[in-house]
Image (cartoon, rainbow, N blue to C red; front, side, top):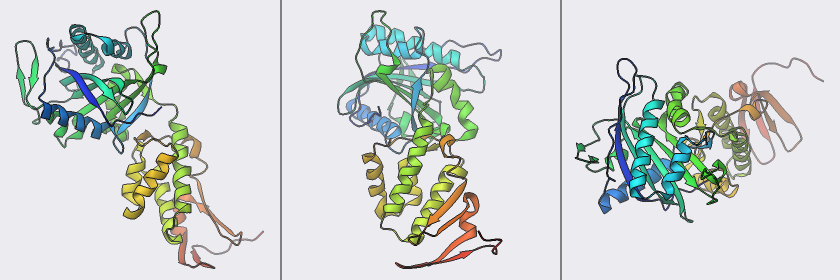
Length: 356
């Protein structure tokens, strides 16, 4: 199931500091807090709002599959955090700080601040655990207390425009079943990762240590189906819209480009609407996709089920005439000169080769 990130509330949070490996690629022990971090009402509200913005509709948040649910996994540790008292919460969070330090196997990966927080989310108040890894930069005002790493205006963590400098992992409980061995099932949770870099091919490996090695997650196997659904539903919306025939053809070209030629590795309803649709139809399109129960967050692009569809483009006319051509050159080879209610004037590059 997909999760709506509205109504997110934070109940507890703690901050630790982690470091990149030393010159010999050995782990430097994280500097851990021994107390929970306290925020005033304003700081907490801003922090909550920024997480909702990062994880909500139209963001780079991607639903993941939990692949490591072993006893020592980050997932099982996070499940325990849900029921932990404050002292146990602090100790378990230290364990996560060490696990992240271990996952950062390369010296290329920088250190930074680790924030672990819990609370409730969605209209039905699902319990969750959130984990933020943020690199050090000018947005931080860090102080070292006796028992805790303090951040003045912790909300600065997400107020910075430097979105590439932080990552968020999120486990939300959707079923409260308990099991005899005290281990939880991944089937009772949904997981999400926000990472600006995951939308870029060249940065996928850089993000792998966080969502795979540390969180124990992988890209959802449903990405193939969701990408196919996105294509067919968007195509349906365009064809049934009140836009002109010429505009519809342009949008079909845009849909092809967005899926086939774009270097982005994620796709989202909001991004397509903002980049290609006229302003007056954007909300209608987003509502249409929501009614079809298509996720409003970003999904990983996987064209496996669309290879044939994206190879050729077709135009069907009411007179039962059809035009077909290679999709990657369709816009250059076939031009709509004029379209009326009863006829269409088309210019086709090339001369007649043969006839059946």
